[in-house]
Image (cartoon, rainbow, N blue to C red; front, side, top):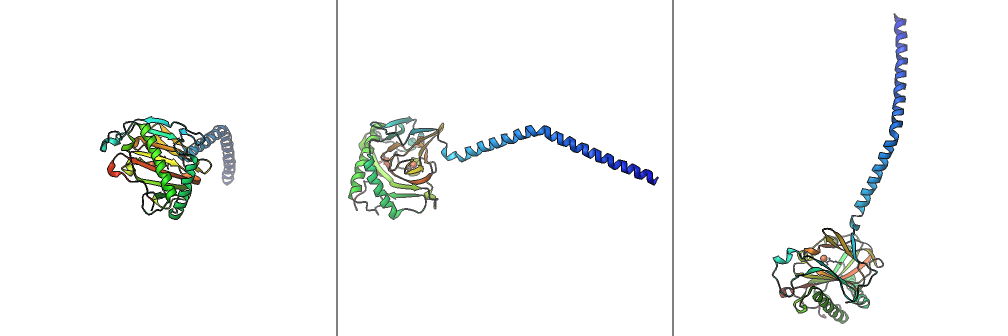
Length: 295
Ligand SMILES: O=C(O)CCC(=O)C(=O)O
Ligand SMILES: [Fe+2]
């Protein structure tokens, strides 16, 4: 009985071994059968993953259309892009001959020369060196009253702002004398230094009329060149059907109606330093300011 049991258990062990070996072989051949599809699946996952990653990392560069590139010169007439006015202006008192009835954006390279832009840029460099912030964005308010920019600046500035005002009036069909300079009107310097305070976060989408209240027309005079003085830092109109950019160029003036038809942002500067002047206009005489005076 004892021997019988032993024989049986020896046989049993061998059978178990055979079954195990058989299972292992089956599993092996089953894996070999799956190897192709699994590899394909892995490749597909990798390809999708990298496509998603590329999309996520390109979110700040999701540019749909370049309205004006740095390399071209828009002259003699501004390049005008008309957009439908938003309802923002209905919540404000209307000023006939000034309040936007035609809205849009325009770019011109023939209102300010590159030489004038260079002079203004040197003044901006000097002024901001004295008063700039440590974060990525510094502004120098031209109406703070605390600043002595000198006679040269006051003369160029008055001249340049008069020409910008005339270009805005002509493009939007306004009476130029009904447009007033308003605040803030400022020099800006942007570099790739990490933001230290919320004020350094210049890249957020915004509507100038909402952010600054009195603005009806915004103009930007660029004092440096996209691509050679800095990278990143393009101006982006964020339209419902896509983004449209303006690439800064020294002496380039970009102007637009300030309501939510012109939601915009500035791309983060990734290298170099970008200088610009924001010159803003209102239709409301109560918000008018005078040109900076010589202190
Ligand atoms: O510097 C720019 O291109 C735009 C600045 C801006 O959006 C602003 O001053 O409100
Ligand atoms: Fe703005």
